Image (tube, rainbow, N blue to C red; front, top):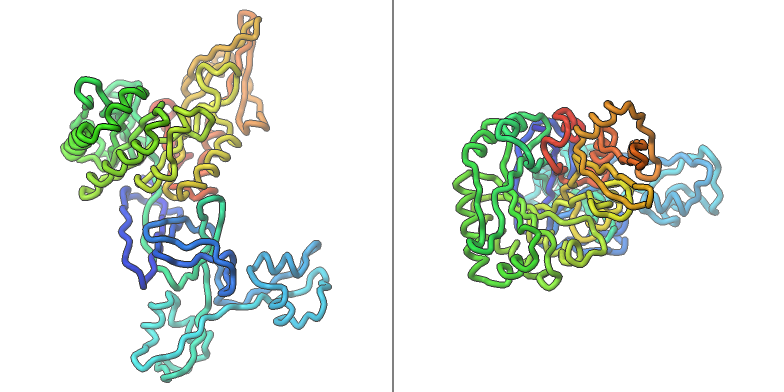
Length: 497
């Protein structure tokens, strides 16, 4: 399995916040997240900076940068630099730069060395203090404390003032904002990044082979569906769950609603029916020793927006004692009231462990216009919109292992055929087509004429998957989810890994 390291930081003076660790893994790519209670987040790493937010208990946000004040910093003036721009870059004031560098005016010259003011926290040594206690309190090394304070020994003098280097983490907050928090206030806990694959459209033999794909960490078979007669249909497969465990994969069964808004309304608004459904799902998850669940309710009536959040909260509460992760699928934000407007993404993000953004169907099967299933700019914008309501490290990016072949007839009428990555590769090879780069979608593109009709394909391939993987890294997301396992060659998972 592939491993990324997630670091959750916890204020020492606050109550410990327990964070689940759903996936064990091997390789490491570090990402970090902070969780705390009533902690001030500043717009820049100065004690007098304007507070942009207070982190409430249970809120979690990823670290996007860090500032280390332990060593002196110098800035070499380049063309276009001004004191204002330099001050803004390092989170200090122009007056501070002028004072430290003894600059009377504002003129600079290219190549000039500008000393960046360091920030320190003052600690008065108490009788019970020891160097190791101060080291632990501020999360700095004893060697660093000795160096910056020029201590001759580890024995501290009562009443002495020690300088503690002020170091900071920058956090990605909701609403597109970012802020800084002191490093010394937080502790570290490791978590993991992972890749999920939905199981669909294949034989039992193919499913078992897929369990050995390198880079695939979690499999999601379609086991649960809302039902008019039984409330819920359960098609669990204990043998598959056992084989997945042997292969080192986790199982998060998919729970769907048949895209039926009336059936969904009937169950979501009835407390007794909700309780029965959740009870049956829980029993099945425990029987199969599943580690999570993927809730995929789509085409919901907007009137059930908060009912759905409540249902997910109830499900999470029921599964929490068993450490079973709850993930919820949401569409990439769009104008449709049923397929997008009915989803309270912020509420779902608080209720569930993970939110999967289904980053595809920019141009859907019956679209009147041919186009990409998921252009990279469209996907990137969707992530940024979702990050306004859900912390980035709780987001899993859904990626398409399929595309569409668009056919336009002589009258300009458009129809489409779904093509997996494997089918598309075969079609391109059989017809001897050459891929061309589309700078607007940031994808490869092919077209051909057949029987007087124009065929167009915006190709999903290794190139597009690499760009999608780059988005996961860029935005500090928790991982990716592919629709669907088997739609692409096994080695494409190495790109997502």
